[in-house]
Amino acid sequence: MFSFFKKKKTSQESLLAEAPKKQRPTFNALKVSNIKRETADCVSVAFEIPETLRENYRFVQGQYLTFKKAINGEEIRRSYSICSSPLEGELRVAIKKVPEGRFSTYANESLKEGDVLETMTPEGNFFRTLSPKATNTYVAFAAGSGITPIMSIVKTTLEVEPNSKFILFYGNKSSKSIIFKEEIEDLKDAFLNRFEVHHVLSREDQGTDSLKGRIDGEKCKLFASNFFDIEEVSTFYLCGPEEMILSVKDTLIDLGAPKENVLFELFTTPVAAAASANEKATKQVVTADKNAKSDVTVILDGDETHFQVTYGGNTVLDAALDAGADVPFACKGAVCCTCRAKVLEGTVEMDMNYALEEDELEAGYVLTCQSHPTSERVVISFDE
Ligand code: FES
Image (cartoon, rainbow, N blue to C red; front, side, top):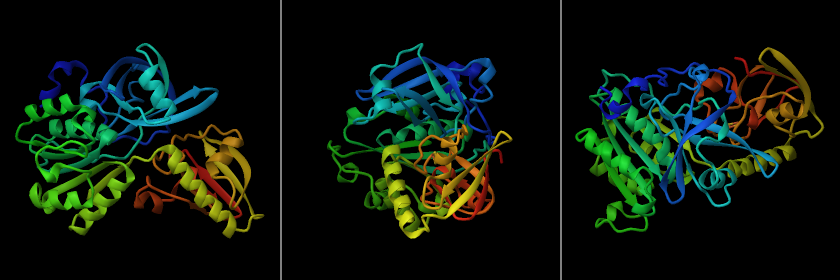
């Protein structure tokens, strides 16, 4: 057990959380302990965690961190998946520079070891609980920096479940843009019979048509007939651009995979998601009674904040921030789930939801960054 992480044995279990207890996310100043250049436009960044914050930064494979930083006078928040395994005793994220990405450019070009970043406690539901007794087959589809949470999931799964197998399909432009290329090779050597990797390259010939191009529904069908038996796969993990996720997810379900076995992490830029949410909110203004107002109460750490919102106006989250409540959020795009809260009274309608599961919706949880009141009085708690 823990063969791949032998060198770091002393601290390897210190960040492992078996089943994360839902705690309210908080920001803390963490010192950057190491920066590693992974590709020409991607760095991975590790953090030093003070003893007093160890409990708060325990994480599960597949979770992410959100950073808060003032850049050119504006506070921005960005989330990045953790690429390390909790068994490694290290908290590390990968940050790929995106065109005009203010935080990703800062991280790739200016961030130094020893700098301090305001870092939110780990969040996210992109994982399955593992068991050393299980004999499972897992399949992951990743594209570009979508590999980040998958790396954490692959490493942890292969260590914790010695009888399970993992098959990874990883899409990139060329072999030069493959993030974690060496680490993936090392994993293949360490888990020779249990880890299989197929690189799919869009701008490089690998001598076979099936591995040329982008990962999409068609490729997924081809891989399902050649590399895995859909009925034997216990969980599919999908992470990459929305287009890839949707086409692979639909194809897997068409091929017979139960919907609940297909987990995905949307890779939507906060800007794109927010723009889409705004568009929907604007439509709602047209259909709702613009003058109708709702009295909203938000509960956070036992304190109540009261304010009014018009039905088609601000989201509950924005209105609560305007009213001075320090409510948690990250993407504002229905993806990250950081703004999750429970409706105790009244009703709201969400513009989008890529983060909450069916059972959470049934229990009354909503994404406040997407929620507009639809009743005269609404009470929402962040403490539940
Ligand atoms: S802030 Fe990310 S889902 Fe609401």
